[in-house]
Length: 112
Image: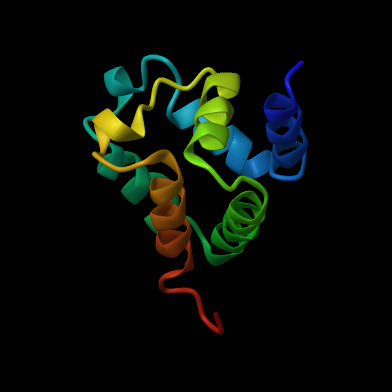
């Protein structure tokens, strides 16, 4: 197993909620369930309670500290079997999208 894959797997072990979110909501046929990435984020992030958002935020921070390149984040999406392709689905690099996801989780939280 390549070092890149090992790093991604180790990071995901510390981020089970975000792993579940990315793997479940953005599975191979996610577009059959959702009209857009924005619809997923609105339903699963914006409408989540504060406790869940804080948990996801902590895990997103961990991934941002651990995964430093677009290649690493692409390996993460591949490992999860994700059908999301940030460069196509949202016209952003994978790591930039993770940063925007982090910022969205953080917005509206008290004391952050």
